Image 1: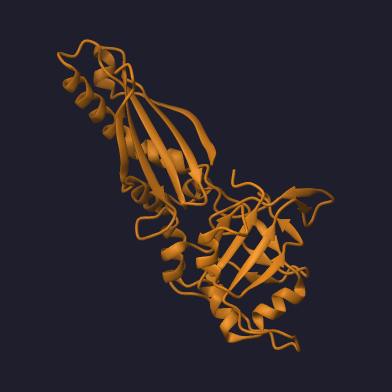
Image 2: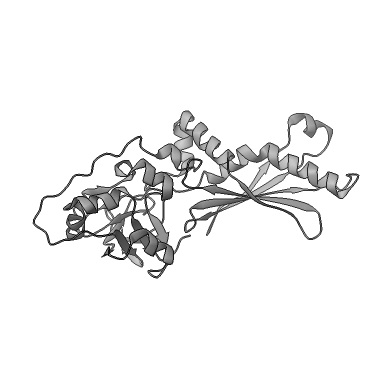
Length: 283
């Protein structure tokens, strides 16, 4: 889990500000790659001059609700989308996309509401899903999948149930002389060693993306969720490198790419997102 935003201070409406010090909403967010969501916590102080505790709690809840749409939009902004962009980059460059992302974030379900032990602060917790109909990844889904280019090379292969990529340790950062650890993203591309594109989000089924995204994220090869996703006969490949500004794209062997692109069944598993990447860290 990774702290995406430190503290966001959202001021009250100007009219209230003129009358008294504006109540402050303190917002923090954490990305949970394994669960596929951004967890957002919004905290507001209770008015010590309120007539009773329930009135103070209700007022603090109203304060949070009023500032929530902007707070959620800002909270998801630092989330890495691909090798070159975070959510905020896309929101800044495309107002219509920004509106769709903000709308998706605003529908995040509230999972908890609780008072601090000293009854001075109210905290509301929200889970913003990556995928699903109201996921923040939904605005990036293609309307339909671009066909993968099948390779007709002579290669020993078979039909696999999924793809398991081990991307642990420091890996060559393609295009540089350095190394980097692989980092998770909503839509990591997969390349072969000749830098031929094997898979990106536009090649995936929109229905599969809505169901569970492009890839699954894990820190263990024994993760039961990984087994469910890639099945009992996955193609297991070690990443040969990483690529992109954020080191999120994964480079696999050219032979491994050929094994995947030689059979219709293996093309289908790529389009269906039956892929798990094993990372050192999901931070």
